[in-house]
Image (cartoon, rainbow, N blue to C red; front, side, top):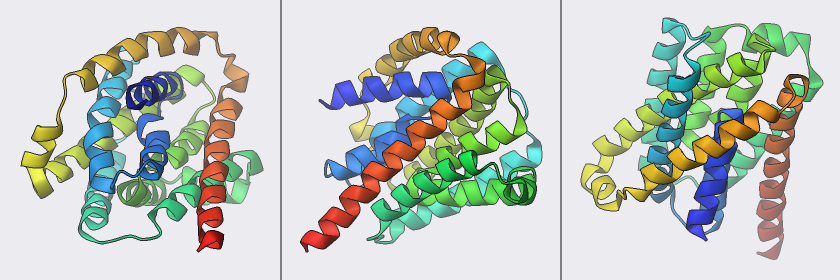
Length: 238
């Protein structure tokens, strides 16, 4: 079951640039994993898919300032999430997914000008959200859609930024508890994403460019609604 989920998530990430952390985090949290276990399992897979995409498509649209801001805020957010008990983590995950999807379909000029086009604002927000919840990829999808309408450039931008975010998280996790990370490492976690990337890239080539952004954001919003439904159902059962 776990292997099947990882394969599907890797294929999704190969198509839209994000997926393993974005969708895998809520899935494995709901399966009973704690946040540290989720990071150990998913980070190597996400990094492998992102690196494969970048090596194939190149790097576009990333500035040094954006990289620095992402590095700083993700490290802080990840450390805090690991060191503190966050009871509302799953709720934050669902809300961030739905919110980012609504931002895309709202196509608000005010939001676009005040957030997405200013990296000094966008990068810290994305970094903090990703560090806390692994859901920065949702806003990253929306942000890339504002920066470019070309699906190849958008996926390349997202893949590089997503790989960077996962790498920073992995470095933070190693600092917190390196031995636990190495004990949990499996070679299969590198083989699965490589094979899935090939399948995902073939599917990506078949997606019409004009439908690419809508498809990715429907994905994000749908998962967010499922998570929120589960959260509120559990709350009502208490």
